[in-house]
Image (cartoon, rainbow, N blue to C red; front, side, top):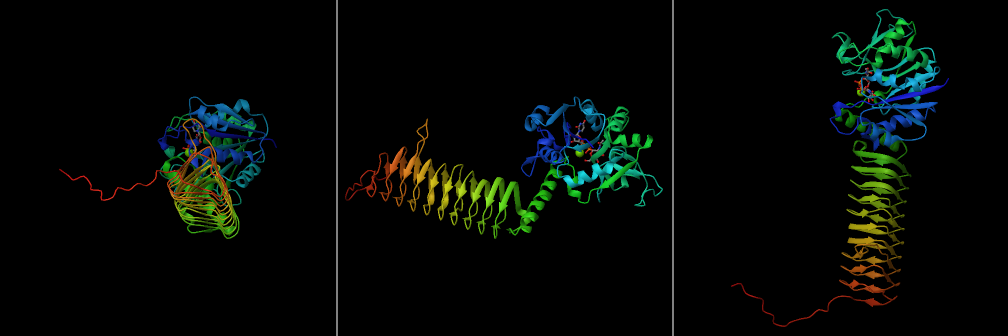
Length: 460
Ligand code: UD1
Ligand code: MG
């Protein structure tokens, strides 16, 4: 049966107390709405309609794509009013699945089960039983056990603010997700009123209309409460973030990755690990990161869009972005690999060394306080402490090429564009502006002068 998905994302998110539209707040490094849209699209629906309103331009710009239709809800008069806006874009048959843009971790299998339960004839509600149901719409049932579960039939959903003290004790709550026969849903939507505590058109009131029409209302219970938790406040967002990170951590540990502490691990993208990978506490992985067999990541590293080859060791407090680290290399502590840093095998990058858009061949070393930008560094080069490539003349960037087995002393400035031949030696403290021939020694510094028996000025 044809499936349409409507995602509600127009609300202001008042409780976030933020200028940013709620659904653009990040969870696991991606906007809340992106999680929902990706899950919805994996159901391969015939259409996916996103209701926007508060911050509509920003939300639509973030999610523009051919398969997605946006419908504006202005002003925002409630969840029922939101779905009403989608009615002209919905066909007259099939099933409509309504999702909440602020319930990000819902799983595909759960949605499939809900759509199956609807079967094009029933109103199917996704519910969950929560120890603390505060703030959620409560599922109100008849007293007489009706169905096979021995519970009464669903009569209505009552919002927290409209509930009687007795109803507030109900722990079975509505998750904000339902599936309904599209034709009937349209009729129920047309009958909604805003006679309630919040003066809003509640989508949840379609339940009472379905009951009045004699349409069966069934419930499908989410097994895992994490997947149906909504984000309404920074506290709930942080709670869900930890739950999502625990899911990531568990999946990695199942695959053999040794995390020093799964509660101090953050993945905001994808992380593919080989065998015997060890990750210490406090690391953040962003974008697409791969870590090969036996590599170790020290504490508090931030690694984004990077490939770490087998056996490499990244020492603590290292920052890596858009870079690759060759097998057996050692990086850090306190090192920074910027985009385009490509390290070969057994390369050593030590503390306070920054590498940008540079290739370091096998066995090259820059162990302390150095900068390599726009450089090609040969095999086994030893690049001294405090040395830098002066790659920028204020207008353009230039390349520095350093041959194999070059020894660059401490505190050198290699003014690009410049080439240093294989096996050359650069004396410490040199400023190199001209090509250095292979095998030669180049020194570019003021000669040392000495004044014997020098008497220092005396304070008057
Ligand atoms: C809603 C449900 C509640 C349920 C809870 C689950 C209603 C009336 N209540 O309450 O029963 O337990 O979700 O999380 O549906 N939105 C719009 N336009 C609007 C108002 C809201 O698009 O005019 C969107 C919001 O952006 C959000 C979603 O609808 O994505 C839910 O709105 P929210 O205000 O968070 O509803 P809740 O109070 O959480
Ligand atoms: Mg909500």
